[in-house]
Length: 114
Image (tube, rainbow, N blue to C red; front, side, top):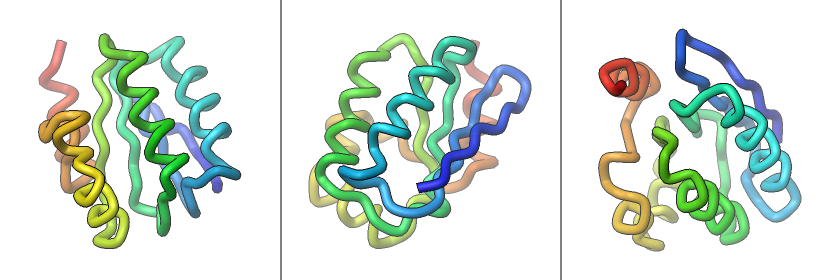
């Protein structure tokens, strides 16, 4: 998985390309923790994520739960990944408001938050 962090004002955008699974999730967790040192508004841009396994989802849930003060959003889920999230009830676990269709919607939403 390739991970790139882009900054827009006080928002960090974590762009991911590839698969979020057992072999790549540690990289995402480390990059998120590093990013959290400077940003409390983070968008996980899933536009390039083709597959997510249970380890990836479990660690994503843990990131959200361990950082309740952070403003995390998830954007650009493809239909396959969105279906996995739906089956596992992630909208209930993380909150329906965490999921945003587009990156621009996520940026606009976080710009409104203090």
